[in-house]
Length: 340
Ligand SMILES: Cc1cc2nc3c(=O)[nH]c(=O)nc-3n(C[C@H](O)[C@H](O)[C@H](O)COP(=O)(O)O)c2cc1C
Image 1: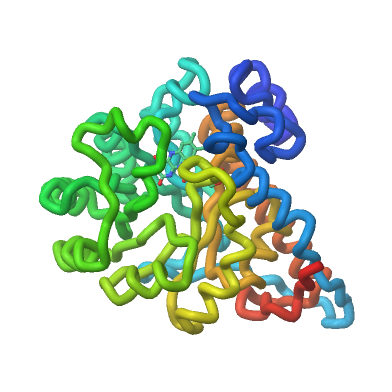
Image 2: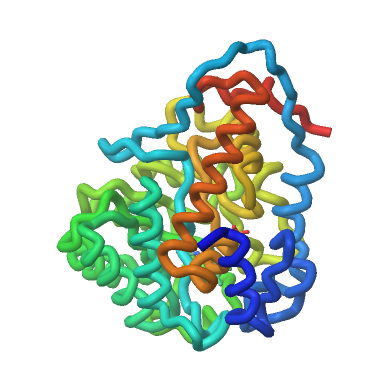
């Protein structure tokens, strides 16, 4: 199978809500909810893609010599093939088509990611099974995955963390921005906003590294880190929780500046290509998460589609590193891009 065939296959299986556009940018699917759109006018989703695409440019420099390009990253005591994660995506049949269940989707991304040497997050949703299906897929994948918990009341989170620990994942995440989802009102147990103190209680309830997803300001980042987060994900949930927001790429540099060089920062929103991965690293991220394009890869080719898309991203990242004379991820610094 080729990646092109994955896309053609996905186009047949995902219609009508997702059209598998040449660039997944939130324009054709605007207003399609349930569906892959952003909230409201989809402007936040569109801004994620457009800002990264239009305002961040690579500085070509081919005078660095022919070297190996090392894109490996060490996290959680393990080495991964590239600084790329599959983002958590839940409610697949409700959002796209009933041609795929959440369990099949999770199996595809967990297996495909592992085959490509990277990690996938599990998604969630308003019902209990939306938590258990990804968790089961991670268990069957030998713990090679990161479950994402919804921001339930702290007591509920603590109960669920016991079940998470039994699966032995590398870490767990919480999308603290879920209260803004259009279907948040259906959630049982309810999804709530989290204070710094509540995040601290959650971090202290387990030895697993805690990844706080849904950070868009330096102040929120500092609260999460003071609370004991291992890493933050600069994310606006792919534009699905608030309309007219800023893009993740444009807030990333100020968040990096506020938290210092040693904090782990992941980012998502609008990352589509290896060049986009390069740009996010140059803007201050350690690694990226990618959402909708992995759904397309999984509908179009299952685990093989996920692996093929990841290999494509890796090849593009390597190419970008070659053309900017970066030997390792550490060399992808701010001076390798220009904001225009
Ligand atoms: C259909 C859909 C379902 C999602 N479900 C979840 C989820 O269950 N948990 C979560 O943390 N984020 C969820 N997200 C957000 C993604 O993890 C990620 O932040 C976002 O998709 C990144 O933007 P991108 O799709 O432009 O790459 C979802 C996004 C989409 C499009």
